[in-house]
Length: 154
Image (tube, rainbow, N blue to C red; front, side, top):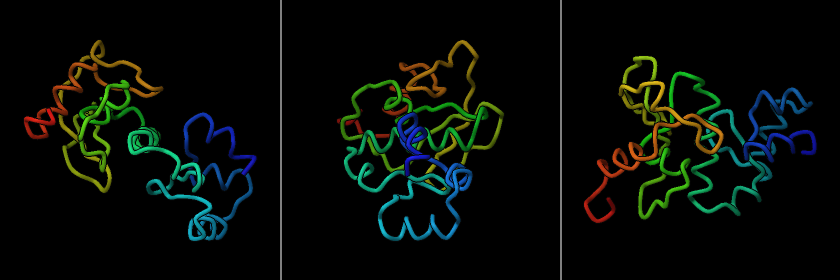
C-alpha cells in the first residue's frame, strides 16, 4: 500500500491503473477488494477499506466525485449536489447516491451507473475550481440541487 499512499493522500482514492503500475496484479486487486482491505468506490477506483469506512457520507461523496472527474476528464464539471459538496456547502438531507455533472461538450444527458450527466450551457467564466476539481459556480449548484428535491430539503 505504501506505493499508493501518495495517491490516497492527494485524492482519497487510487485507480486500477495506478495499482498495476506500482506492481499489483489484477488478481491482487480482486483479492484485496473481496477481503475488504480495499473498497471499490466505483468501476476502476478504490480506497483502503478502513479509510473509506471512517469517512462520513459527504466525504465519501467528495472522493467518489473526484474519481468520476478523473475518469470523465474535461468533458464535464461538477454540478447540482456534487457541486454543492465540492464547494463545501452543507448538504442537509440531499441524496448523495450519485455524482452529478454538467456536460460541457454538448453530450447527451443521461444516468450512467453512479453518475447523472446533465445537459446545460456553461460559459468559461461560470466554471471554477472547487476541492481541486472543475465545478460550476456555487450559486448555480445550490439552485440546481434545490430543484431536484422537496421544498423542505431545498
